[in-house]
Amino acid sequence: MLLIPIVGPLVLAAVAMIAPSAAARRWLVVLNGVLHALATTYVVIWPPDAMFNRWLALGPIGRVMLGFLSAQYLLLSCYALGYLKARAERPNRVFCAALIAILGPMSLVMIAHHLGLMWVAIETATLCTAPMLFFHRTPQSIEATWKYLLIGSVGIALALFGSFFLAYSAAKVPGLDTKLLFENMVANADRLSPPWLHSAFVVLLVGYGTKIGLAPMHTWKPDAYGEAPGLVGALLAGGLTTCAFCALLRFVQIAYAAHDGALAQELLLVLGLVSMAVAAVFLARQHDFKRMLAYSSVEHMGIVAVGFGIGGRGTFGALLHLINNGFGKGVLFLAAGNIHRAYGSRLTDHVSGAIRRTPASGALLLAGFFMITASPPSGLFISELTIVQAAFTEGQYWAGGAFLVLVAVAFMGMGSTVIKVVLGAPPAGAPGAAAAAAPPPAPPQREPLLTVLPPLGFLILVVVLGVYIPDWLSSGLEAAAAVIEGGS
Image 1 (tube, rainbow, N blue to C red):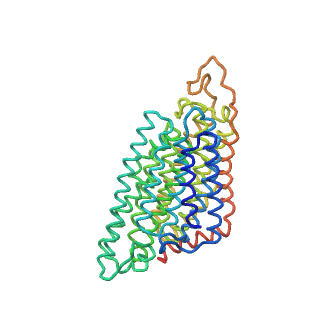
Image 2: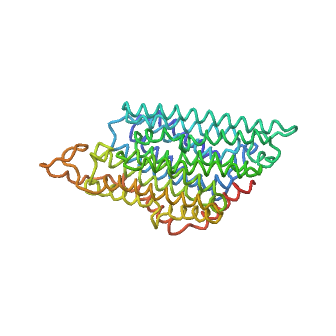
Image 3: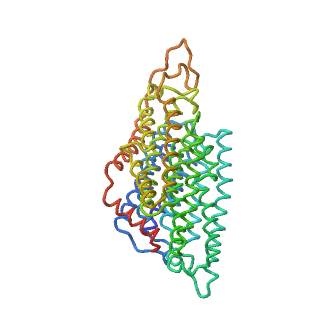
């Protein structure tokens, strides 16, 4: 059963490539989401035995995050049905195939327990994303795609070097053969060569940190998120970055087991606060609301890094924040994509009064803003509060204080952009045109139901997690946090 979430999407992607009908390919995306959700539910509730000498196994981290990825993708696949129908003038063969296929390697990241196999999964997911970034076929989109691939290739190359360093730290020990399995490395972590282990973690942090989008390795995000369809931005910000973080957590677990947890915590804490500071600066006076979402992603990846850097209860908060952020970004990216299509512009100079022209998407963008900035009853309020409480409990007063200040600055910067987009009078005339004095404002536009219900579904999930965290989810996150810091 472990193979179904991995192989199933690849088979359906091959079918999408040969399917003659554009409508059939759209429905294959939904079928992929439904089948993956069913298979994931089965393996999460009844975890199967490890396969291929433990190359594939579903541990505590994988159980929680594989379930999250499947839920996120299911809602995104429903949105894709309405989005691709609205963009019927564009060929969707490659886009649909890539959108279906990417779920396979993303699932493999959560299930792989072999150092090399996990690296291959991350790189495959990256390559699947590239055709989707180029969907609009504009000079800006091809530039963003090349930038994404170029910087991502440097990051994944560094991650490969870090993996070599980690393997060599085991090879330096006579008689130790870990077979590059994470369980074996954790069990023998105190025997690994410390200099090579330290070097490995630093290089891996930079490599996978590039995929995550931690500053200063974040420079691909504004272009990629700005040019990608909202659907793809949500998948990147909530899905692929979560996969990269979960890959990094494997090495954090090894560092804890080798009694090097302090080094990992310090590096993550510093990179997290730097990411939050960089995002806060660029969120101020941001005139492009899709690039604004990119810097919001940098901020929230920084928040997650701070949580892991604090440790203790902060690890639980960081894991919960990964889930909340993924759902929250689903609201924002999908609503922003709808507004972008209605106005033909991403700039606040041309976009205003969205609550009147696109009432549903305007309301969702405004609600999503409050959710992503941790306003109660948002689930992000719970996860961020948990991280702040952990900072003060662990005696990290300076980190907790800096965290609160940076979150407040980001709230004000992001709020100024969202208010300009949502409120005010809609510009008169054609979408994308500046407001004119004579013609009356454009009337409200009819929004397809399938482009509104999925972001509404994400919003409901974020609110529910802010009011009630199910026992099964809480216990799963507790088990994952214990594995990361307990080294077993």
